[in-house]
Length: 437
Ligand code: GDP
Image (cartoon, rainbow, N blue to C red; front, side):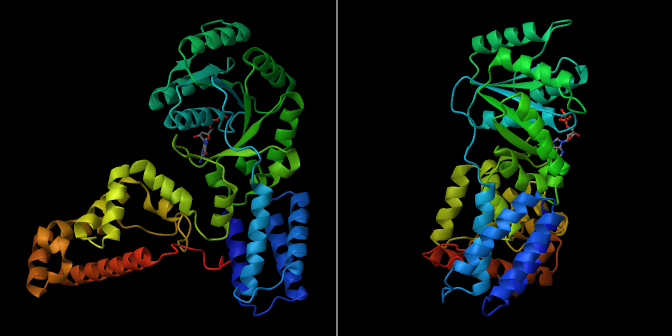
C-alpha cells in the first residue's frame, strides 16, 4: 500500500537530509518535488496546493534549531502537515447502543466483505453483533454474507422469499432488538453505477432503520473518482463516515489523501486484504509514519498482541528486563512469530524493512533453527556461553545441521541479546531519529 508515494518521498528525504542548511531555494525545490509526488499519487489538486502552501509557509517561518539537522526539521513540518490533513475529527463509531449501521457502496467496492470485517471487529471489541442481508436484489450477495457470517460466527438476518424490503427491515429491526444485539450492520444493495433506483432504495432503508451511522465503502483504487462517488451519495443520504476498502492494493493513495478535504467526511476504517481479519481503524499518524518510512510500530505491536497471549508477552518482557533471556525464550518467540502468518507482511510495518514481497523469509531456515535449539540441553539453552566445540558437534549431529550453521546462529542470538540489553538499559525508550525536541 502506498508504495509509489513512499518511494518518491523517501528518495526526496534522502536528498534533503544531505543539506547542511535550508535556504529558500532548496525549500522551494523540495516543495516542487512534494507537489509532483502527490499529484502522481492522484491526490486532489486542491489538497496538493494547500499542503504545499502550508509546508512552505511553516518551513520559511521556522527558526532552524541547532540540535536538529535542517532537512529533518523540514521533513517533520511536512509530516505534521500531512497528519493534519488526514486526521479525522470523528474518531471511531457512535457510542450509542444499540447501534444501527447502514453500510452502502457500489457493487464490487468490497461492501459485503467489509460488512463481515466490521462485524468481526465489533465482536472483538466485545459487542453482540449481527448482520442484516438487506440486499434484496442479489441473492448471491445474501449467500455471500451468510457464508461470511458463519465463518466469523455472527448471526445473520435474511429476507424470506418474496418479502418486500420495508417489511423485511421492520422485521429485522424487531428481531435484533429481541435478540439484544448491541451492534447491527445492515448490508444494503449495491449497483454497478450510481443510479436513482439505488439511491431511492437506500433512502427507504434509511427511513425504516434510522441508523446512527451510515458508512460508505469506497474502493481505494478508484482514486479521485472515489471522491465523486462520495459526493453523489452525500447528496441523497447523510453519510457519517467512510471505509476505504482494498487499501492493500493502493500504491498511490489519492482517495485517502483527498477525501476528507473535498467531502468533509472522515475515513474511519481501512480494508487491507481479502481475509476478514484484514481490517483496521484509520489512524492518520500511522499512515504518515509508514509513508515516511518510520514503519508502523503501533500496528505491528497490535497485530502481535492480538495473537499472542498477554501473559506470555508480560513474561518475556520480565525476562528481558531481568536479562535472563535465553534460547528457550528465543524459541518461544520464534514460534509465536510463525503463528503470526506471512512474515514479510508483518515485517513491512517495521522501519528499515522494505515493503511486501521484497523480503524473503525462509521458512526452512526457521525450521533448522528450531531443530538446533531443540537439540541443546536445557542448561545450554539457558546459558549458551557454555556451548563449546564438542557440544556444537553433538548439536549439529542431533539437529541434522552443521557446526558453521550453529556458529552463525549463536552469533546472531548474541547480537539480539546485546540489542535487548541496550534497549532495556535505555531510560528514554525508542525515539525516531529526528524527533529530538
Ligand atoms: P461487493 O460487491 O461490494 O459486496 O464486494 P465484495 O465484498 O463481494 O468484494 C469484491 C471483491 O473484492 C472480492 O473478491 C473481495 O474478496 C475483494 N475485497 C474486498 N475487500 C478487500 C480488501 O480490503 N483488499 C483486497 N485485496 N480485496 C478485497
